Amino acid sequence: MKEIEQYRDQINNIDNELVSLFKERMELAGRIAAYKRDNNLPIYDSARERELLNRVSDLAGEELERYTRILFSMLMDISRSYQHKLLHDRTPVSMQIKEAVENTPELFPEKAVVACQGTEGAYSQLACDKLFSLPNIMYFNTFDSVFQAVNKGLCRYGVLPIENSTAGSVTRIYDLMQEYKFSIVRSTRLKVDHTLLAKHGTKLEDIREVFSHEQAIRQCTEFLKAMPNVKITVCENTAMAAKMVSETDRTDCAAISSRNCAELYSLSSLKNSIQDSDCNFTRFICISKKLEIYPGAERTSIMIVTPHKPGSLYKIMSKFFALDINLTKLESRPIPGRDFEFMFYFDIDVSVYSPAFLQLISELEVQMEEFQYLGSYTEIVS
Image (cartoon, rainbow, N blue to C red):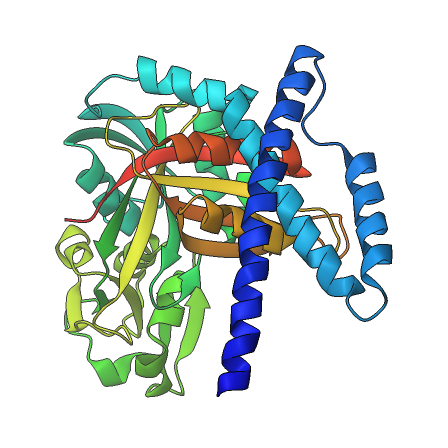
């Protein structure tokens, strides 16, 4: 034991020297930042960093070369972050955020024209009613049409499902987010209870075909397994499924839909709560063409395309750790037309008023291959 304590004492002495040298290095990094500011030079200098990594790798020798490159890559990331902080570097996106915070009204609107996918009784409509007191809802057949309605100014807002606690993410929404420029201004979680609806007088054993949206079908897998001889047909929306059943002459079909669609479309409930999990929630986002950041915004969504090389994602994750920012969601989606390259979607919990938040946005904007800020907002959970 005495021997290991001696080793630890030696490491402590070396660590003391490292801290002292680190402070000295960061002071010099600050002076360099000031020089770059005065001479209108960018903080990131790829040629300089490549030269430094090659030099320290040679100094370390073959056995420690890889570890040395990792150590100094991290050290340079820290230096760049420190320089951004000292210079209060303001990128175009960070300035847009500050402007939106200053110019957005204090209260979220109670009334607005809102685009939803589906028809009356859809879960999107229920989510819309949670977000707005008096929404004027316009219904569209597809998610694409909702994005187009907001993009063209036909509707001020659009409400769309983004993920489900049982079935996972609505991947089409992520793909559309790469195509359109918009902002998330609010979100909400909706408890989803699926009900099997059919015409009055129809019995469960009479059912030969079930209609619903693909997400609802995935959320009711166990229930549908008990009906092996029933045909499952995917349609655009759960409420549309209920409407189809109500309008058909058939008495052997049913819809997986919300319970309130029973009264809305004069259908009978054959079985309630048929989803696999009682804790079944869908998260909806409210999008706007204009960037709006309402008071109290504590959640932010961003999309990033990283350089296609080892360690790129790790470098992003290290920024969250260094700035003490909590990452709540990380989703990857393939980029259309690019072989095995991916876009990463992040949800982060941090106040829009936090200096660390603006520093993170500024750093990501200038360092990433592609960066898209999707908005800062409040999530309604009640």
